[in-house]
Length: 404
Length: 88
Image (cartoon, rainbow over all chains, first blue to last red; front, side, top):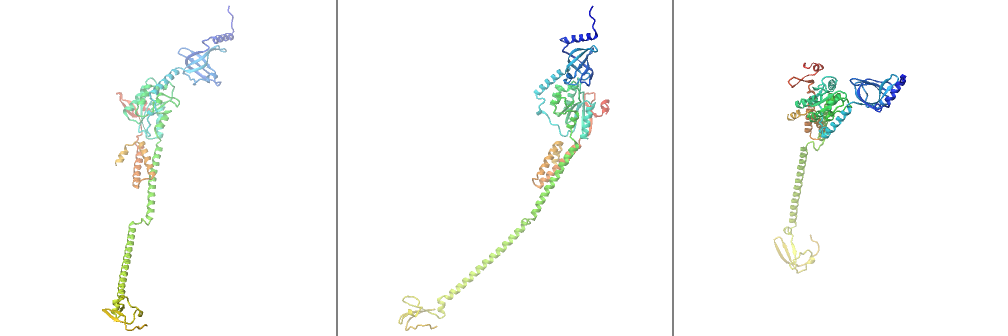
């Protein structure tokens, strides 16, 4: 008969068999996580199951630390593990080395491919993006009318700008029909032209939940929208094709509400500041001119231009008068001097002297005046001119010396 | 006034930009007093326009519903209106 094993030996032997199997030493298994527990030691314990079966798994701290995500119950994953037997309980288990999300690899690859294609086409071009209006008169939002997202948006909007105007286009935001419904919403707003800006919003969720926002047709609809579109999908770390195609990406729906509507009190303060500046500027401008006017009015030169003309004209009159007087005086004195000259000329005239009884003696031979007795000798003819004729004489004797 | 009619077409944003430009021009203090007064009047008009743009937005939250014939109808939005559907 065969040898009888102890339990310990059996478990040890099975363990050896499992460990030496080339397939079971590095096996990849697909399944859903359940009964997940993380121990204080850092080791993870859970079951991996499918519709019919389940298997116990353990991920020791050293390996678990390298997982790219925190496992949760219900998550579909693919693990890489080795099969082993837990000696104490004789329990079969998988020791997990690596863990990845099931299907994520495919989704991620599809996402990258679509992103690259649309980028190439220019759907994400910065130059094509429209500015979000500073004050939208009406805001359109495509989202689920139920749940926290729309309530968050309403709450933020009413805090910033109490009299905001919001129009909700209800849409599924996950599942098979979601992408088409969201697209219809954006198209409806473009057809009706009732809003100044469109927000496409959805709360956080798994990559599968957000998948409808990675829709090619939706990206094109957003690109062609003539109304600016804000994409507010998921959490800050989630990026979707919709985010890239939109005119503005908001990290969360609440953030979209912050971005779309200004704070009313701040706008009012801004308007008031401008109005104050306006008034101050005008008053300043008037004050400057008033000051200038005062300076000018004090200046004598410009006090009255007419007065200056008057005073100049008066001065001119005075000068004219003085000139006339002076001229007259000069003319008068000249005239008087001429009269006097004429009179003295007359007085000096020899004829006038002769008429007063004087006579003029001349030498008839030389014709020169006899002014001295020495010019005359006895017997010499002397011509005496009187006022009315000549007397021809002969000198008889000469007597020198003053007689008159 | 012709200019007022022209302003009526401006959006809040455009009116605000125009107001800022008018204030800057007036601030520069160039031009005649008549020009300054004209700028001031223009600025006051724009300031009023900006304020009225803030107030003329009607406070409402509405949600679209299908009337069953393929056209959308706006109804007042509340948590109940979405859950009950037809009620306004």
